Structure formats: structure tokens, C-alpha cells
Image 1 (tube, rainbow, N blue to C red):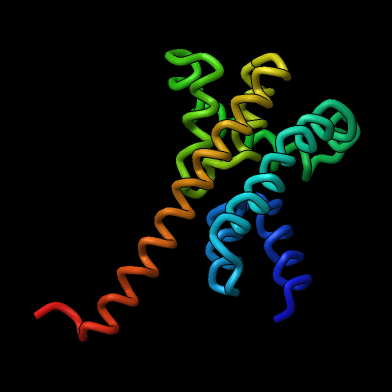
Image 2 (cartoon, one colour):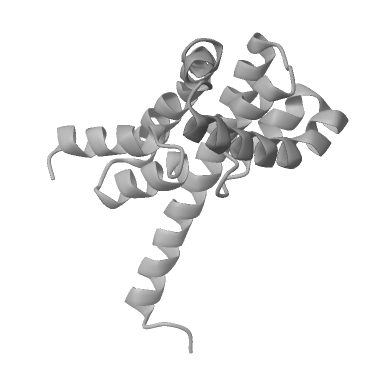
Length: 163
């Protein structure tokens, strides 16, 4: 796969709500992109989720709420985000959003963090800073785990395993 295709797929994975950094960074590293480029590229694109999501929520969302299928989906998604975020935000304020986004697990990324901040009424500027901070930390965690895991795997392959 050429570099342009690798970057396109990495960009797509960084921006998708399901994969975000958890999919983009391992993909980019598996394709031979240096860890620092994979981190910077994926984090930059995943951080763009926050302003794009906020823009959507403040404009097109109001139009889509008229459709029953969207309203039902959105209500379920919002309730799940509210339950997951409420305790952290009550305790830590906007830094609770950053901590939530920083944990690279399913349904803890930039999309859910931005939506949760919007639902909980956190001011836009603080919410965007919190999500970007969380994305940077999550990217560092994912990059470290993938790089260290690959090094450990190479060690075990070369050494023939334990024993």
C-alpha cells in the first residue's frame, strides 16, 4: 500500500466514531509509518472530531431531530453518554471529560466526549480543550502499547519464547 493510501485509511479510521485512535494508530504502524508520524497524524485528525461534532450539534442536529429514527438513536446515545460521563464531570469538571476521552476503550473517544460535554452544558471552549487533551493522552497510550507490544512480540519470536 502506498503512503497516500495509508494516510487516507488512517485519516478515515481516526475520524470514525468506532475506531478513532484505537484503530488508526495500530493500522498506520502496521503499514510501516514511523510511530511519531502515526501519533501526530492520527491525534490531529481525531482532535478535529470535537469542533466538527460541536458544529453538527449546534446546526444540523436540530433538523435531524424531526426524523423519528434519528431522535430514537440520538436519545439512546445521549443517555449512555450521560451515564458514563456524569460522575466524572460532577467530580472533576471539564477535566472529567479529558480523563474520559483519554481512556482508549470503546465508547470513550472524542465523539462521545464532545457529545457528553454538550449534553452536560460544558462551555464550548473548555469542552474542546478537554477533548483535545484527552485525545493527545489516548494517542500516547495507544502508540506506546502498540510499539511496546510489537517489540515484545519481536523479542519472543527471535528468542523462541519463554523457557
